[in-house]
Amino acid sequence: MDINQAALSELQAILDQRPKQRNVGDEPTLVTPIIERLLEVLNFSHLDRVPFFKVNFNPVRRTDLACRYPDANGTCFFSQQKDPLLLVELKATSHVFSCDKKYYWDVLSQTKEQLLGQNSASAKFGLISNGWELQLFRRHHKIIHPLTPILELNSETADQIARRLLRIIQTPERGTIIGIYNNKGGVGKTTTATNLGIVLAQQGKRVLLVDLDPDQGDLTGLLDLQPVDRSFLNFLMGKQAFDEVRQTYTYGAGKNKVKLDVLPRDKKFVTFSSDSNSSDINVSQTIGREFLRTKLLEIASNYDYILVDIPPNWRWLSQSGVLASDILLILANHLDRSSLVNLDILVTEFLPDVEQWRSEMKPEDSPVSLLPLVLNRYQHTPAQERNCENLLKYISQRDPYWERTFNNFFYTKTSSMWGLSGQKRCIRLPYCVEIASAPLQGPKYVPAPLKYKKARDTYEHLIREVIRDV
Image (cartoon, rainbow, N blue to C red; front, side, top):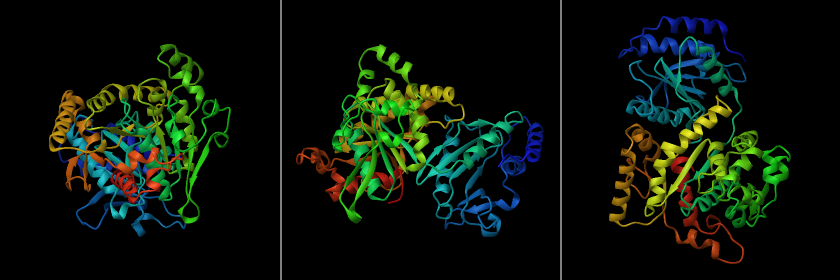
């Protein structure tokens, strides 16, 4: 399916005649006609669109437009008015979309709420626009992340933007790549990656774990798998097929059987993780940072979730892991100042570099986004909780431009069993002795969620909060 050229010409004419002045309240008179014409360019006819679609049982909760192509029987969306594909939220041109504007985050929050509504469970995409800028988001279960940066819409860019949006909408559904990261070690990244993958697999999801830490390779060791020599590297370089490199972890039998795939530690990468700067030069001459994302995207349709255990530094392998991720799950410890301070470094220094690398390797690739911050092994006194909250507040306010970005990435309105319903706060995974002691119980390690309900409940809570409804 190609774009509708006639509708594109009409859209470009409307954009050329658009007033230079941005005004309050011009959503119905200016913005709606622009976006309706853009939808026609994407081959959504007037019968494929429903205005003021009710996203849940609350009659007030409606999205401006909902869209879906005709189903396999040729039935149009307007006649059925169910199972939308794309939800569209429109705002007045006076509201500039920018990460340092509160209004942008309010629109994004509204769009997420609509995508998670009972009547929009089928929706895969959300589009926000003010007639001058637009941005497309993807929904995968409860994870909602941007597929484009904020794009400037005008007559010169309309063709390119329309083709980009159409390619995304037509791309077959794939799994989400979640990188688990903090520049600080010892915060429980490997334990979380392993146990989170186990619980997702228990729920029937197709899971791939990627052990990107060549020095320790704890994920590979915990699952009693053997490290490989050059296989992972050969896979990245296209010299070995994925099926020749992956290993499978299984536990139990019958209905209780848990199964997931693993890309194990590659011992060859140890030479790339030394303290010498030359190691980064050597590996960059062998494979580029983008190789991991390219190869994971090739196999992502085979999985629901790909979890990447990223080593705690900012050298080549860590950079590749973050670059490969659709979204990052950041772990920190409320008693570890360095793990909290690193959040500021990640947002203000590392992610801008990643966006630059991604734009250079594939300008149309999606930005890296963040899940809410997870305070792992949370066991606190009131004073410790207060100190942690004060430090996070101090970090976020150090840079005015990033303050809104920081707060909206790392905080969530949670109904957590460990938090107050509706309060904006970090996600907290409580200290669980069963999780901490599991690696030492017996000669063969059995992941804690496979033995203890309390451990499984801990990760199911995390999954419910940010990944999917259990």
